[in-house]
Image 1 (cartoon, rainbow, N blue to C red):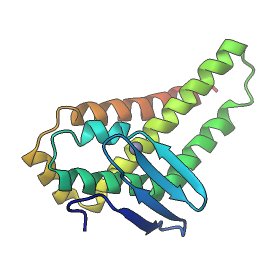
Image 2: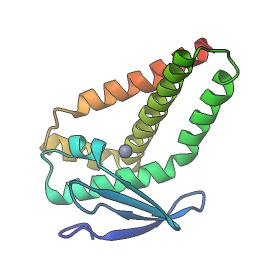
Image 3: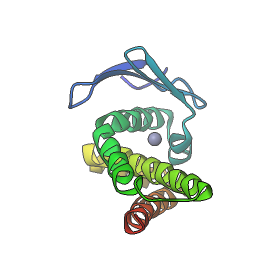
Length: 161
Ligand SMILES: [Zn+2]
């Protein structure tokens, strides 16, 4: 199904949200939820799928976008928890700007980590085999960097609230 030309996939998350995923090309991805279009550049997919065969690149890119949908409750729960524990504290204006940037970064790192982990959990052997055949130099940096940003920033934000 994912060989050849990219196609639009209609999917349904485990909690009932329906969406349409479009990995249009190497420069643009689209997730459509009802009338809401979430066009975005494929930042993580570009680096993590570098050097893969086209079919593998498409398969893992679609799964990554689906992973974002499937792990949306985790991402929202994480963001709500950070906002809940941190938003009552008094801060200067630069303090608020720094706090908001740190929350956004922790949220993004957590969601990317959750989404890519979803692919691994959905098919550990296929994932390992794909990257064994085509080793990716960015992969260790992605996992280490995202884990550090996600867990490190989250712990730091909770400790300082
Ligand atoms: Zn992503």
